[in-house]
Length: 327
Ligand code: TXA
Ligand code: MG
Image: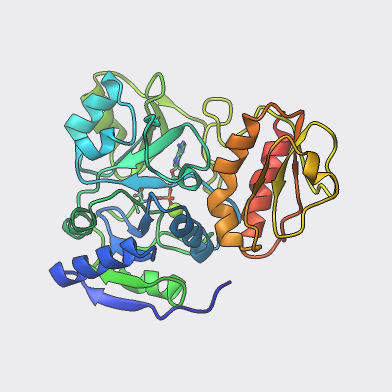
């Protein structure tokens, strides 16, 4: 963990929105109210800021995050909308509804924020303070609920401070959040599917769609991505992954960590370093994009050097283990 931060709390208003935008642009972390719960925001396009966000939450795994925008054009720059998704956005946005959609080809959101998936969760919040921050910042913002991992979602600035003081830069206090539960999540990757019940009632969604929602199986308790078998829950490379590699076999590609490379590294099909200075925040930010690039190298396996199990290393190792186990 990096040195504790001085967490400032500002009352909502135009000065606070400007300060929030400044902190976000500098790669910092800002908690702010939405109509559902308080979110912990980071610049969605900045992989290192997203890595810091996971670290601040103390999440032992990289679950994909929701990207927040203020208008439909901004959402369409991130994701592809089919007719069902267009109906839901037209009828129910802004509001407590998140759509999981195919990622657009030129989507600028950091790979870490979508945990390497080809889909992205997008939401247009209906709260004046959230909207003012997003508009002033002018770029998409990822925001999970602003609690420590395993704690309940915060509905007041005091809840956020109790969980995250010393771990984030700024809290914007806009009073209690009106809805109080997280957004409803619907995947439009085929037949519209309810992934998480939440602040937008199922009946309102089905009315806007003109048909019933498919239900995903009940979510696991740890906020893991939902619906195994229905949706890919995590990124899985096609190439075999070999963990804890202390030497490189012929024909392998290398996912390195730190300055000293293993024996045989000179003959690697392709080598990418998560962080040559051994920085776990940098490593997290690079994880999924490096895996993708090595997956495309035509290697017989991707050998992965050991990553220390401290701080974000726990989440990095979790994702690497899943990628290794998946084939
Ligand atoms: O109301 C809300 O949605 C709040 C406010 C701050 O906007 N945010 C929130 O975020 O609840 P979080 O990170 O606590 O929950 C996001 C959920 C997780 O269960 C995650 O697995 C799911 O969204 N999710 C995100 N991207 C996904 C994807 N591509 N496919 C499936 N599930 C996804
Ligand atoms: Mg949450």
